[in-house]
Length: 403
Ligand code: SAH
Ligand code: SF4
Image (cartoon, rainbow, N blue to C red; front, side, top):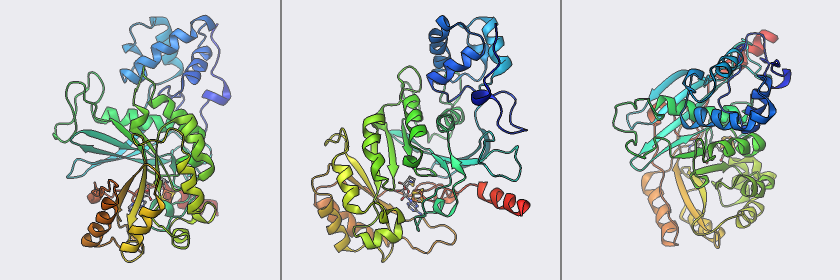
């Protein structure tokens, strides 16, 4: 007997949504539900989930017909109900340094508030190749509710949280584009790590749009899929979640997700941090650093990264650097100095290079690795804090239409 997909899990959300939902990005439990909905007997569900898991995540299959160890009959049934679609790639920009910025359009979902109900929200995703690694910067929300004053994404109102499926789909879609699945050909620009056993995407950072700890459950489920050894198989030590300081969720992140942690610190005094990262009013520096000291699994081999954006004349004095070192005493830490990336309308400037160097020297001499993060992809507005998709324009249009 075949059972129709259950309304809550698999029915299209809005009128024009694709008739068939995608299986790509689902958890094992969700895949199990999809198989049950297709009529797979309970005794076979586990085995079938393992097969689909391998094809979807390890092989990157985008066609049920490739799944040769799945019976023809089941492949046909699955194809009748589901797809293996990824989010649509709306645009790709390639920077001269090989950085790629993709704009992906998601399937429509409740809460999108877009003018065109059939058109899903859009999110940006950035890929940064280096000689020994390839890092994918993923988004966890469309927009952000926090309003850090130096961040372009912060000027975009939250449209909604991404589902775990949508978070995982960013990696699958990126690997498609990078030819990082068996049978695909990598782009030939020579800037993407490739070769025997080399992965184009070896690291994931949750540093795209949104505050990941405000979308905890979906981020956590996504991390479970990204790190599953039978599929995408990324080590949790190569997955970093960056937070502006949502203190109550930090212990849970360590316990449940077990990833690396990055803290967007940016200031060493509460009064200044309150203006840069308004969330500091709720969770001041002292509480934030205590949560860091208590972070499960913290050790010299698993340090916390502290991000510090260099803002000219605002937070970049030698005294700031010395205070930073004092504050972090006793915490296994790396300090990542980020040159401020300007965006249209921003009220800050990037610190001068000699000032950044002086700051970095103080931190380095105190015993901390203090790499200055080379701005990547600036020519395509893909650097940190520059992400802001077209969704907001659509949202504004929707408001106009509703008025
Ligand atoms: N919301 C999370 C993760 C996304 S922001 C967080 O705030 O940590 C990713 C990183 O980019 C953060 O450290 C953020 O402070 C930094 N960032 C934001 N805007 C920036 C800009 N214009 N220039 C440089 N870094 C920026
Ligand atoms: Fe949101 Fe992070 Fe930008 Fe702050 S820095 S507005 S938390 S995305």
